[in-house]
Amino acid sequence: MQKKVAPRELIQQDFHKLKSSERLYTNPKVEDLIFLQSVEGRAHNGAGSFNKRFYVNTTIDEVVRALGRSPKATKAKRQELIDEIVEFVDSALGDDPRDRLVTRNGKPFLGIPLFKDRTVNYHDILKGLYLGGLRDDVEIRSRTEELFKIDIGYGRCYLVNTDVMGEMGLDGEDLAHQENEDRLEEFKECGLIVDEGKIRYRDAKHIKYLYIRHHVGPGQSDDAAMVASGLLYNVDVALGVFLADAIDTLEKYVSVYRDQDNLLARYIKENYTFLDCEEKDACELSYLAAIPKEKIDEIPDSSLRYFLSINDDTGQSELETHINFIEGKPIQQIPVSRRRIPVTELYEFVKEKLKSIKREVVFKIPEVLGEELKSSVTKVMRRSFITVSPHTSLKTALQKAEARKSELIIVKDENGNILGVVNPIDFLVFLRGENNA
Image (cartoon, rainbow, N blue to C red):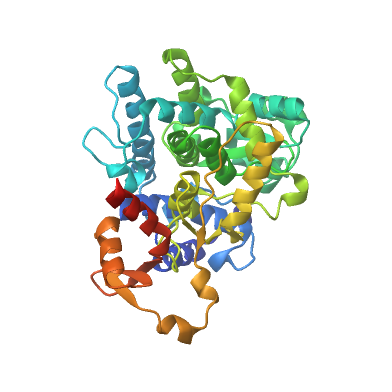
Protein backbone atom coordinates (compact mmCIF):
# COMPACT_ATOMS: atom_id res chain seq x y z
CA MET A 1 0.00 0.00 0.00
CA GLN A 2 2.84 2.39 0.91
CA LYS A 3 4.37 2.31 -2.58
CA LYS A 4 1.12 3.78 -3.89
CA VAL A 5 1.42 6.80 -1.60
CA ALA A 6 3.24 9.78 -3.09
CA PRO A 7 6.72 10.56 -1.70
CA ARG A 8 6.93 13.49 0.68
CA GLU A 9 9.28 15.43 -1.63
CA LEU A 10 6.91 15.18 -4.60
CA ILE A 11 3.96 16.31 -2.49
CA GLN A 12 5.89 19.35 -1.31
CA GLN A 13 7.07 20.16 -4.83
CA ASP A 14 3.58 19.92 -6.31
CA PHE A 15 1.98 22.01 -3.58
CA HIS A 16 4.49 24.83 -4.00
CA LYS A 17 4.11 24.61 -7.78
CA LEU A 18 0.34 25.11 -7.43
CA LYS A 19 0.77 27.99 -4.99
CA SER A 20 3.14 29.81 -7.31
CA SER A 21 1.29 29.23 -10.59
CA GLU A 22 -2.43 29.62 -9.76
CA ARG A 23 -4.65 32.22 -8.17
CA LEU A 24 -8.03 31.37 -6.72
CA TYR A 25 -10.97 33.74 -6.28
CA THR A 26 -10.74 33.62 -2.49
CA ASN A 27 -8.40 34.63 0.31
CA PRO A 28 -4.96 32.97 0.83
CA LYS A 29 -6.11 30.87 3.81
CA VAL A 30 -8.98 29.22 1.94
CA GLU A 31 -6.83 28.89 -1.18
CA ASP A 32 -4.32 26.96 0.91
CA LEU A 33 -6.98 24.54 2.20
CA ILE A 34 -8.24 23.89 -1.33
CA PHE A 35 -4.77 23.32 -2.79
CA LEU A 36 -4.10 20.65 -0.13
CA GLN A 37 -6.95 18.61 -1.57
CA SER A 38 -5.93 19.36 -5.15
CA VAL A 39 -2.53 17.76 -4.55
CA GLU A 40 -4.30 14.54 -3.48
CA GLY A 41 -6.18 14.44 -6.80
CA ARG A 42 -3.07 15.24 -8.81
CA ALA A 43 -1.22 12.40 -7.10
CA HIS A 44 -4.03 10.00 -8.03
CA ASN A 45 -4.02 11.18 -11.66
CA GLY A 46 -0.27 11.47 -12.11
CA ALA A 47 -0.61 15.20 -12.89
CA GLY A 48 1.70 18.12 -12.16
CA SER A 49 4.92 17.20 -10.37
CA PHE A 50 3.82 13.56 -10.18
CA ASN A 51 4.57 13.34 -13.91
CA LYS A 52 2.36 10.39 -14.91
CA ARG A 53 3.24 8.38 -11.81
CA PHE A 54 -0.02 7.36 -10.17
CA TYR A 55 -0.08 7.33 -6.36
CA VAL A 56 -3.66 6.14 -5.94
CA ASN A 57 -3.56 5.62 -2.16
CA THR A 58 -2.43 9.15 -1.37
CA THR A 59 -4.91 10.90 0.92
CA ILE A 60 -5.28 14.51 2.06
CA ASP A 61 -3.88 13.37 5.40
CA GLU A 62 -0.60 12.32 3.73
CA VAL A 63 -0.48 15.68 1.96
CA VAL A 64 -1.05 17.61 5.19
CA ARG A 65 1.61 15.65 7.07
CA ALA A 66 4.13 15.88 4.21
CA LEU A 67 3.79 19.67 4.33
CA GLY A 68 4.39 19.73 8.08
CA ARG A 69 0.88 20.90 8.87
CA SER A 70 -1.24 19.89 11.84
CA PRO A 71 -3.97 17.45 10.77
CA LYS A 72 -6.14 18.51 13.71
CA ALA A 73 -5.86 22.24 12.94
CA THR A 74 -6.35 21.72 9.20
CA LYS A 75 -9.48 19.64 9.74
CA ALA A 76 -10.87 22.26 12.12
CA LYS A 77 -10.32 25.08 9.59
CA ARG A 78 -12.11 23.14 6.85
CA GLN A 79 -15.00 22.27 9.16
CA GLU A 80 -15.30 25.92 10.14
CA LEU A 81 -15.99 26.82 6.50
CA ILE A 82 -18.83 24.29 6.47
CA ASP A 83 -20.17 25.40 9.85
CA GLU A 84 -20.46 28.99 8.62
CA ILE A 85 -22.85 27.86 5.89
CA VAL A 86 -24.81 25.71 8.35
CA GLU A 87 -25.12 28.68 10.70
CA PHE A 88 -26.58 30.73 7.82
CA VAL A 89 -29.24 28.03 7.42
CA ASP A 90 -29.97 28.00 11.15
CA SER A 91 -30.33 31.78 11.17
CA ALA A 92 -32.79 31.62 8.28
CA LEU A 93 -34.80 28.89 9.95
CA GLY A 94 -34.78 30.91 13.17
CA ASP A 95 -36.43 33.92 11.51
CA ASP A 96 -33.17 35.86 11.44
CA PRO A 97 -32.16 35.48 7.79
CA ARG A 98 -29.29 37.32 6.11
CA ASP A 99 -29.45 38.76 2.62
CA ARG A 100 -25.78 38.10 1.91
CA LEU A 101 -23.66 34.97 1.90
CA VAL A 102 -21.61 36.04 4.88
CA THR A 103 -21.04 35.05 8.50
CA ARG A 104 -22.53 37.01 11.38
CA ASN A 105 -19.30 39.01 11.38
CA GLY A 106 -19.66 39.88 7.71
CA LYS A 107 -16.97 37.51 6.44
CA PRO A 108 -17.88 36.08 3.00
CA PHE A 109 -18.38 32.32 2.75
CA LEU A 110 -15.31 30.47 1.46
CA GLY A 111 -13.51 33.83 1.30
CA ILE A 112 -15.21 34.60 -2.03
CA PRO A 113 -15.19 38.40 -2.53
CA LEU A 114 -18.45 38.75 -4.47
CA PHE A 115 -20.40 37.19 -1.60
CA LYS A 116 -19.63 40.18 0.62
CA ASP A 117 -21.72 42.68 -1.32
CA ARG A 118 -24.04 40.55 -3.46
CA THR A 119 -27.65 40.53 -2.19
CA VAL A 120 -29.37 37.12 -2.18
CA ASN A 121 -32.77 35.67 -1.36
CA TYR A 122 -32.24 33.27 1.54
CA HIS A 123 -35.25 31.15 0.46
CA ASP A 124 -33.58 30.40 -2.86
CA ILE A 125 -30.22 29.71 -1.20
CA LEU A 126 -31.93 27.11 1.04
CA LYS A 127 -33.59 25.62 -2.01
CA GLY A 128 -30.24 25.33 -3.79
CA LEU A 129 -28.59 23.77 -0.74
CA TYR A 130 -31.40 21.22 -0.63
CA LEU A 131 -31.22 20.32 -4.32
CA GLY A 132 -27.43 20.38 -4.45
CA GLY A 133 -27.06 18.35 -1.27
CA LEU A 134 -29.40 15.60 -2.48
CA ARG A 135 -28.39 15.21 -6.12
CA ASP A 136 -25.31 13.13 -5.22
CA ASP A 137 -27.25 10.88 -2.84
CA VAL A 138 -26.97 7.19 -3.75
CA GLU A 139 -30.75 6.67 -3.64
CA ILE A 140 -31.44 9.84 -5.65
CA ARG A 141 -29.00 8.83 -8.37
CA SER A 142 -30.42 5.31 -8.49
CA ARG A 143 -33.94 6.70 -8.72
CA THR A 144 -32.82 9.15 -11.42
CA GLU A 145 -31.45 6.28 -13.50
CA GLU A 146 -34.84 4.58 -13.34
CA LEU A 147 -36.91 7.72 -14.00
CA PHE A 148 -34.90 9.02 -16.93
CA LYS A 149 -33.61 5.69 -18.30
CA ILE A 150 -29.96 6.75 -18.14
CA ASP A 151 -26.74 5.47 -16.60
CA ILE A 152 -25.06 7.81 -14.12
CA GLY A 153 -22.96 5.84 -11.67
CA TYR A 154 -22.81 6.53 -7.95
CA GLY A 155 -21.12 5.77 -4.64
CA ARG A 156 -20.19 7.44 -1.36
CA CYS A 157 -17.33 7.90 1.09
CA TYR A 158 -16.70 5.43 3.90
CA LEU A 159 -14.19 5.06 6.70
CA VAL A 160 -11.79 2.44 5.33
CA ASN A 161 -9.14 0.38 7.11
CA THR A 162 -6.22 0.61 4.70
CA ASP A 163 -4.43 -2.35 6.32
CA VAL A 164 -7.41 -4.58 5.49
CA MET A 165 -7.59 -2.99 2.04
CA GLY A 166 -3.98 -4.04 1.38
CA GLU A 167 -4.57 -7.55 2.73
CA MET A 168 -7.46 -7.92 0.28
CA GLY A 169 -5.24 -6.87 -2.61
CA LEU A 170 -7.21 -3.67 -3.16
CA ASP A 171 -6.22 -0.03 -3.42
CA GLY A 172 -7.95 3.35 -3.60
CA GLU A 173 -8.26 3.05 -7.38
CA ASP A 174 -10.16 -0.26 -7.11
CA LEU A 175 -12.57 1.13 -4.54
CA ALA A 176 -13.20 4.37 -6.44
CA HIS A 177 -13.65 2.99 -9.95
CA GLN A 178 -14.81 -0.63 -9.79
CA GLU A 179 -18.39 -1.86 -9.33
CA ASN A 180 -18.60 -2.58 -5.59
CA GLU A 181 -22.33 -2.48 -4.81
CA ASP A 182 -22.55 -6.26 -4.33
CA ARG A 183 -19.48 -6.30 -2.07
CA LEU A 184 -20.49 -3.67 0.50
CA GLU A 185 -21.69 -6.22 3.06
CA GLU A 186 -18.50 -8.24 2.57
CA PHE A 187 -16.43 -5.08 3.09
CA LYS A 188 -18.24 -4.40 6.36
CA GLU A 189 -17.96 -7.96 7.64
CA CYS A 190 -14.23 -8.22 6.99
CA GLY A 191 -13.51 -4.81 8.54
CA LEU A 192 -12.60 -2.93 5.37
CA ILE A 193 -15.50 -0.52 6.00
CA VAL A 194 -15.21 0.62 9.60
CA ASP A 195 -17.97 1.66 11.99
CA GLU A 196 -17.02 5.10 13.30
CA GLY A 197 -17.96 4.14 16.84
CA LYS A 198 -15.42 1.31 16.85
CA ILE A 199 -12.36 3.34 15.89
CA ARG A 200 -9.62 3.43 18.49
CA TYR A 201 -7.03 6.20 18.61
CA ARG A 202 -4.14 3.85 17.81
CA ASP A 203 -5.96 2.72 14.67
CA ALA A 204 -6.47 6.26 13.37
CA LYS A 205 -3.51 6.28 10.97
CA HIS A 206 -4.88 3.22 9.21
CA ILE A 207 -8.40 4.63 8.88
CA LYS A 208 -9.00 6.83 5.84
CA TYR A 209 -12.16 8.43 4.46
CA LEU A 210 -12.26 6.97 0.95
CA TYR A 211 -14.77 6.94 -1.87
CA ILE A 212 -16.25 3.53 -2.70
CA ARG A 213 -18.10 3.32 -5.99
CA HIS A 214 -21.35 1.37 -5.86
CA HIS A 215 -22.28 1.50 -9.53
CA VAL A 216 -20.01 2.41 -12.44
CA GLY A 217 -21.20 5.17 -14.77
CA PRO A 218 -20.12 8.43 -16.41
CA GLY A 219 -21.07 10.62 -13.44
CA GLN A 220 -22.32 14.20 -13.19
CA SER A 221 -20.97 17.65 -13.93
CA ASP A 222 -20.95 20.08 -11.00
CA ASP A 223 -20.74 22.90 -13.55
CA ALA A 224 -23.89 21.65 -15.31
CA ALA A 225 -25.71 21.31 -11.97
CA MET A 226 -25.00 24.93 -11.07
CA VAL A 227 -25.85 26.37 -14.50
CA ALA A 228 -28.96 24.21 -15.01
CA SER A 229 -30.38 25.10 -11.58
CA GLY A 230 -29.73 28.77 -12.29
CA LEU A 231 -31.58 28.68 -15.61
CA LEU A 232 -34.37 26.48 -14.27
CA TYR A 233 -34.94 28.54 -11.11
CA ASN A 234 -32.64 31.55 -10.59
CA VAL A 235 -29.06 32.50 -9.79
CA ASP A 236 -29.53 32.30 -6.00
CA VAL A 237 -30.65 28.67 -6.27
CA ALA A 238 -27.51 28.10 -8.36
CA LEU A 239 -25.38 29.64 -5.61
CA GLY A 240 -27.00 27.30 -3.08
CA VAL A 241 -26.11 24.34 -5.34
CA PHE A 242 -22.54 25.65 -5.55
CA LEU A 243 -22.30 25.89 -1.75
CA ALA A 244 -23.59 22.32 -1.39
CA ASP A 245 -20.84 21.15 -3.76
CA ALA A 246 -18.28 23.10 -1.74
CA ILE A 247 -19.44 21.35 1.45
CA ASP A 248 -19.14 18.00 -0.36
CA THR A 249 -15.52 18.87 -1.18
CA LEU A 250 -14.53 20.18 2.25
CA GLU A 251 -16.10 17.30 4.20
CA LYS A 252 -13.51 14.90 2.75
CA TYR A 253 -11.04 16.02 5.41
CA VAL A 254 -12.62 17.11 8.69
CA SER A 255 -12.68 15.89 12.29
CA VAL A 256 -15.92 13.89 12.12
CA TYR A 257 -16.65 12.22 8.80
CA ARG A 258 -20.23 12.31 7.60
CA ASP A 259 -22.19 13.23 4.47
CA GLN A 260 -22.69 16.83 5.51
CA ASP A 261 -24.21 18.26 2.33
CA ASN A 262 -26.79 15.47 2.31
CA LEU A 263 -27.53 15.87 6.03
CA LEU A 264 -27.94 19.63 5.61
CA ALA A 265 -30.35 19.09 2.70
CA ARG A 266 -32.52 16.77 4.78
CA TYR A 267 -32.31 19.13 7.76
CA ILE A 268 -33.65 21.97 5.59
CA LYS A 269 -36.45 19.75 4.31
CA GLU A 270 -37.51 18.80 7.83
CA ASN A 271 -37.39 22.30 9.27
CA TYR A 272 -38.26 24.73 6.48
CA THR A 273 -42.00 24.76 5.87
CA PHE A 274 -41.78 26.90 2.74
CA LEU A 275 -39.34 24.75 0.79
CA ASP A 276 -41.22 24.37 -2.48
CA CYS A 277 -39.37 21.35 -3.91
CA GLU A 278 -39.21 17.60 -3.39
CA GLU A 279 -36.88 14.67 -4.02
CA LYS A 280 -38.23 14.44 -7.57
CA ASP A 281 -36.77 17.90 -8.19
CA ALA A 282 -33.40 16.66 -6.95
CA CYS A 283 -33.72 13.75 -9.39
CA GLU A 284 -34.44 16.22 -12.18
CA LEU A 285 -31.31 18.21 -11.33
CA SER A 286 -29.34 14.98 -11.11
CA TYR A 287 -30.51 14.16 -14.64
CA LEU A 288 -29.63 17.63 -15.94
CA ALA A 289 -26.11 17.30 -14.52
CA ALA A 290 -25.62 13.71 -15.73
CA ILE A 291 -22.97 13.33 -18.42
CA PRO A 292 -23.88 10.95 -21.28
CA LYS A 293 -21.33 8.20 -21.88
CA GLU A 294 -20.54 9.48 -25.37
CA LYS A 295 -19.78 12.99 -24.01
CA ILE A 296 -17.58 12.03 -21.06
CA ASP A 297 -14.57 13.83 -22.57
CA GLU A 298 -16.58 16.82 -23.81
CA ILE A 299 -18.46 18.07 -20.74
CA PRO A 300 -16.50 19.81 -17.95
CA ASP A 301 -16.84 18.74 -14.32
CA SER A 302 -14.94 21.24 -12.22
CA SER A 303 -13.56 20.73 -8.75
CA LEU A 304 -13.82 23.59 -6.24
CA ARG A 305 -10.31 24.62 -7.23
CA TYR A 306 -11.29 25.00 -10.88
CA PHE A 307 -14.52 26.82 -10.00
CA LEU A 308 -12.43 29.45 -8.24
CA SER A 309 -9.33 29.44 -10.45
CA ILE A 310 -8.79 32.90 -11.99
CA ASN A 311 -8.22 32.83 -15.73
CA ASP A 312 -5.03 34.73 -16.60
CA ASP A 313 -6.43 36.24 -19.81
CA THR A 314 -9.72 37.52 -18.44
CA GLY A 315 -9.06 37.94 -14.71
CA GLN A 316 -12.29 36.05 -14.05
CA SER A 317 -13.16 32.74 -12.40
CA GLU A 318 -15.51 30.01 -13.61
CA LEU A 319 -17.89 30.85 -10.78
CA GLU A 320 -18.22 34.46 -11.95
CA THR A 321 -18.58 33.37 -15.57
CA HIS A 322 -21.38 30.93 -14.72
CA ILE A 323 -23.19 33.64 -12.73
CA ASN A 324 -22.92 36.06 -15.67
CA PHE A 325 -24.27 33.46 -18.07
CA ILE A 326 -27.26 32.64 -15.85
CA GLU A 327 -28.06 36.34 -15.51
CA GLY A 328 -27.74 36.96 -19.26
CA LYS A 329 -24.71 39.21 -18.93
CA PRO A 330 -21.82 39.19 -21.42
CA ILE A 331 -19.33 36.41 -20.72
CA GLN A 332 -15.71 35.73 -21.52
CA GLN A 333 -14.85 32.58 -23.46
CA ILE A 334 -12.65 30.67 -21.03
CA PRO A 335 -11.49 27.05 -20.82
CA VAL A 336 -12.98 25.25 -17.79
CA SER A 337 -12.20 22.22 -15.59
CA ARG A 338 -8.98 20.25 -15.83
CA ARG A 339 -9.96 19.21 -19.36
CA ARG A 340 -9.83 22.89 -20.43
CA ILE A 341 -13.12 22.73 -22.35
CA PRO A 342 -14.55 25.97 -23.81
CA VAL A 343 -17.22 27.19 -21.40
CA THR A 344 -19.73 27.74 -24.22
CA GLU A 345 -19.74 23.98 -24.89
CA LEU A 346 -21.01 23.46 -21.34
CA TYR A 347 -23.74 26.06 -21.86
CA GLU A 348 -24.90 24.46 -25.11
CA PHE A 349 -25.03 21.09 -23.36
CA VAL A 350 -27.16 22.48 -20.51
CA LYS A 351 -29.54 24.21 -22.95
CA GLU A 352 -30.11 20.94 -24.82
CA LYS A 353 -30.65 19.05 -21.55
CA LEU A 354 -33.27 21.57 -20.44
CA LYS A 355 -35.09 21.22 -23.75
CA SER A 356 -35.20 17.44 -23.24
CA ILE A 357 -37.31 17.76 -20.07
CA LYS A 358 -39.71 20.19 -21.78
CA ARG A 359 -39.47 22.76 -19.02
CA GLU A 360 -40.18 26.38 -19.92
CA VAL A 361 -36.95 28.28 -19.53
CA VAL A 362 -36.40 31.79 -20.84
CA PHE A 363 -32.80 31.91 -22.00
CA LYS A 364 -31.14 35.27 -21.59
CA ILE A 365 -28.29 34.29 -23.88
CA PRO A 366 -25.37 36.69 -23.48
CA GLU A 367 -22.90 37.65 -26.16
CA VAL A 368 -19.47 36.06 -25.82
CA LEU A 369 -16.74 38.64 -25.39
CA GLY A 370 -13.20 38.24 -26.61
CA GLU A 371 -13.87 38.36 -30.35
CA GLU A 372 -11.13 40.99 -30.56
CA LEU A 373 -8.63 38.19 -29.93
CA LYS A 374 -9.19 37.08 -33.53
CA SER A 375 -7.88 40.41 -34.78
CA SER A 376 -4.24 41.01 -35.63
CA VAL A 377 -2.01 42.46 -32.91
CA THR A 378 -1.40 45.57 -35.02
CA LYS A 379 -5.14 46.20 -35.40
CA VAL A 380 -5.72 45.88 -31.66
CA MET A 381 -2.83 48.22 -30.91
CA ARG A 382 -4.46 50.89 -33.07
CA ARG A 383 -7.67 50.78 -31.09
CA SER A 384 -8.26 53.53 -28.55
CA PHE A 385 -8.57 52.49 -24.92
CA ILE A 386 -8.70 53.73 -21.36
CA THR A 387 -7.32 52.08 -18.23
CA VAL A 388 -9.13 51.89 -14.90
CA SER A 389 -8.53 50.31 -11.51
CA PRO A 390 -10.51 47.23 -10.42
CA HIS A 391 -12.32 49.41 -7.86
CA THR A 392 -13.79 51.73 -10.50
CA SER A 393 -17.55 51.28 -10.87
CA LEU A 394 -18.72 49.94 -14.22
CA LYS A 395 -20.92 53.02 -14.68
CA THR A 396 -17.96 55.39 -14.22
CA ALA A 397 -15.77 53.35 -16.55
CA LEU A 398 -18.44 53.33 -19.25
CA GLN A 399 -18.99 57.08 -18.95
CA LYS A 400 -15.25 57.66 -19.40
CA ALA A 401 -15.10 55.28 -22.36
CA GLU A 402 -18.06 56.95 -24.06
CA ALA A 403 -16.69 60.44 -23.48
CA ARG A 404 -13.32 59.54 -24.99
CA LYS A 405 -14.74 57.30 -27.76
CA SER A 406 -12.66 54.42 -26.39
CA GLU A 407 -13.10 50.96 -27.88
CA LEU A 408 -11.68 49.08 -24.91
CA ILE A 409 -11.49 49.40 -21.13
CA ILE A 410 -8.35 47.81 -19.68
CA VAL A 411 -8.48 46.97 -15.97
CA LYS A 412 -5.12 47.20 -14.16
CA ASP A 413 -4.19 46.72 -10.51
CA GLU A 414 -1.99 49.07 -8.51
CA ASN A 415 1.15 47.28 -9.78
CA GLY A 416 0.20 47.77 -13.41
CA ASN A 417 -0.81 44.14 -13.97
CA ILE A 418 -3.65 43.72 -16.48
CA LEU A 419 -6.57 41.97 -14.78
CA GLY A 420 -8.92 41.94 -17.75
CA VAL A 421 -10.45 43.79 -20.68
CA VAL A 422 -14.02 45.12 -20.99
CA ASN A 423 -15.69 45.88 -24.30
CA PRO A 424 -17.86 49.00 -23.65
CA ILE A 425 -20.21 48.21 -26.53
CA ASP A 426 -21.60 45.26 -24.58
CA PHE A 427 -22.67 47.48 -21.68
CA LEU A 428 -23.37 50.95 -23.06
CA VAL A 429 -26.94 49.95 -23.88
CA PHE A 430 -27.59 49.67 -20.13
CA LEU A 431 -26.00 53.05 -19.42
CA ARG A 432 -27.99 54.75 -22.18
CA GLY A 433 -31.16 53.06 -20.99
CA GLU A 434 -30.55 54.49 -17.52
CA ASN A 435 -29.98 57.98 -18.92
CA ASN A 436 -33.22 57.75 -20.90
CA ALA A 437 -35.26 56.53 -17.94
